Image (cartoon, rainbow, N blue to C red; front, side):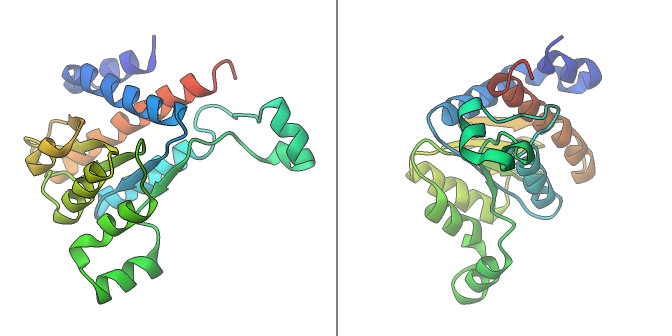
Length: 203
């Protein structure tokens, strides 16, 4: 049983999302294979999810991800204390930059500014908003598209305004913010597990 099958077996309510989750995986896989990175953003609980995703990608999730032999030679004794990483940055985790921009420029553009600064063509923005209408997340998605990045949305309800800005929009069921957030976690955990299995097989 693969990770996607495990997701839908454990969470039958997500069984209609197989195609979208597979599509999001394909976008991320292609980006990483071409030297890209993931930028993640969201507000409140979705900010925590942004940080959580980065934590699963930048170090071992299910696997220990030992370095390749050529890397072990380069890093010597340090190699035993390093793990393979899939580059990812949470845009919620820079308080000095964020508060300066909030205060000096425009609070609604705080994520967009970071996408402008960090993002390059081929990167992926992982935009999380339970309503699909968080203005600062929408602005980030617009900047990402202008920079020829791919956009994956993780949302609820009908996807909101974010839906039209995404290459793939992962819309989970749920009538409340809490319900939607509870489904967000297994979706992004599955994506992280699929990526780990692809890039660090047999470990």
